[in-house]
Each structure stands twice: as C-alpha cells, then as structure tokens.
Image 1 (tube, protein in one colour):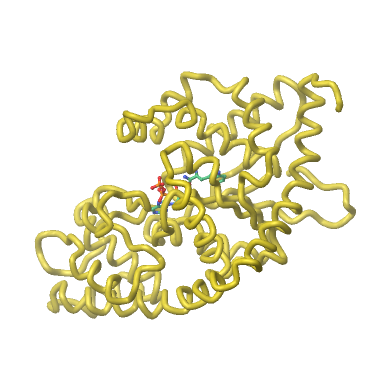
Image 2 (cartoon, rainbow, N blue to C red):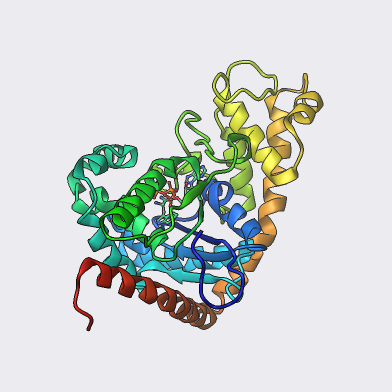
Length: 341
Ligand code: ATP
Ligand code: LTN
C-alpha cells in the first residue's frame, strides 16, 4: 500500500462514483451508496458523480443538470459526510480526462472491445455508437488511479472494469516505474444487494435508465408509487417465500430488499410468511421500504431547497479533489516524458 509523506498514518483510500444518467434507484443504494456511508469511519473517501461517464449515452442537458444536483442531495441525505471526506463532480476535476488520455494510449483495444458493458450498451444504443462507450472503462481507471484508491465499493456489474483498472495500473508501473496502487473491488454479497434485479424482469439487473419505470424502485418515488411497484412486482409460480436466486429470482429479489431495510433474515421471513402467500409479504415489504426511505426523501428535499449551499459544497469538494489529483498527474506526466510547464 502506498504511503503519504504527511507524517500521519495513512488511512486506506476508498473511491467510487455513480452516473447521473437518471434518477438514483435502490440498486445504486444497496450496491454502492449504503456501503460508502459505512466505510467512512475508517477510510479516506472520495465519492463522485461521474457526469463524463453519463454522456457516453445521450443525456438531455436539463435532465443531466437536474439529475446531478438531485443525486448529490441524495448522497448527503443518505449519510455521506462532505466535511470529513471528498464529494465532487467528475467534470469539475479536469485531471480525470487528462489521465484517461494517457491510459488510453496503453489500453489494449481488444480488451476494451470484450467488455460486457460495452457489448451490452453498443447493442442498446446502436444509433449512438460513440468512442466514449468504448473508452468508458479507461476513464473509470483514471478516476481510481488518480487518488491511489485501495478499495472501490461497487455492485457486481463493475467487477470487469476493476480488473481493467488493475491491468492498466500494472502495465503503467511496468512500462515506466512503480506509480499506481492496484485497486481492489469491494462488492457486497448477493444476499445484501450486489445485484438488485428489475421488479418486472427479475433475470435482468435493475437499472436507473430502464425504459420501463415499473421495474425500477427510484429512491425518490412517492410512498404510494413504491407500494404499487412492489404489489405489481413479478414473482414466480408458487406462493411460498423462499430464497433461491437462481430458481426463483423474483421472490429472492424481494426478500433481499426486505432484509436490506428491516434486517430480518431469510429464515425468519420464510417462517413468518409460510402459508400466507405473496400478497401479505408484498404489503409488508412496501410499508418497510416507505418507512426506510421517507427520512432520506425528506432530507433530500430540504437539501434541494438550498441550491447555493449545495453549489458551495461542490466547489469545496472540487478543490480538495484537484489538489490530490494534480499531484498525481504531475508525477505521471513527468514519467511519461512530458516537459514540465
Ligand atoms: P445506467 O442505467 O445509466 O447504466 P445504473 O443504474 O446501472 O446506470 P451506474 O451509475 O452504472 O448505475 O452504477 C452506479 C453504482 O450502482 C455502481 O457501483 C453499480 O455497480 C451499482 N449498481 C447499479 N445497478 C445495480 C444493481 N441493480 N444492483 C446493485 N448495484 C447496482
Ligand atoms: N462505471 C461505474 C461508475 C464509475 C465508477 C468510477 C465506479 C465511474 N468511475 C470509479 C467506481 C470508481 C458504474 O457504476 N457504472
């Protein structure tokens, strides 16, 4: 693990980000945000909104602006502390794009073309098959390596991108000299939300940009909507409650949500709802989700009421991040052979 020369013991660095490509949903929360909050105790954390990544898919400018600010408010409402840690918008720190360019020049094209997300998104966005979609994971590697992050808390879908970040770090260290820390992914267990599934199509992951909003539980959905979405959620044939993600993905997904918001384990849920059918289970789950999300929603609304304060926080976050990022980028540029400015 790299050490800083400040004299203080270095706390491990955590870094992660979410795309403001839509409104944040429960998969983002369980796969990422909730763990970010927990990791703040004993780590030095960098949490971003990755707007440069978001525009690899067409974003209406007004939506991008709204989603970025709303997501920032949700980060804070969920418990992220911008005073003790660093919260910022990716495009406010131009060093990310600068390092991404250098890493692009050592990234094997074949490996980028084999990325699952690239293949999926190219099929989905055939009419906007841009180079950003291919280079997406290189920019993500730049995000991580700029801060020498030790651990990157993400959902399961990001595992392959983390492997690329490690490969690029290793390749740069080998070509030039020891520079970057090799980052480790930190992925929660499946039963705790590493891969929350769509409520309408439980074999596909829940995704904030899904074209069917019924499949997605948005963090800011009004209570009546949350309950209705859970009532309409696709379950499996049969009517018993049992955890089996392969065989019964629908009910297992709902059980994961239940456990996440109440802490009740699967055995207890199975016993308590035995013989009661899906109806009673879904009603209780809807109530539990509303109870869990209401305080977060309330706090988000309050924060969004003071835009000037959010903007001031962002300014402060960008300054903290830039200071760290600049030092690393200077070192990298020197090693590559660029003349100092
Ligand atoms: P998009 O739909 O625009 O591709 P997304 O909703 O899939 O976005 P991202 O912004 O790509 O979300 O991901 C942000 C974080 O949320 C990542 O750590 C990712 O692994 C996690 N995440 C996304 N979807 C899920 C999910 N269904 N279950 C668990 N974690 C998820
Ligand atoms: N690709 C990530 C978002 C992301 C990210 C990062 C996550 C961009 N840069 C750096 C962790 C660390 C996603 O979740 N889709």
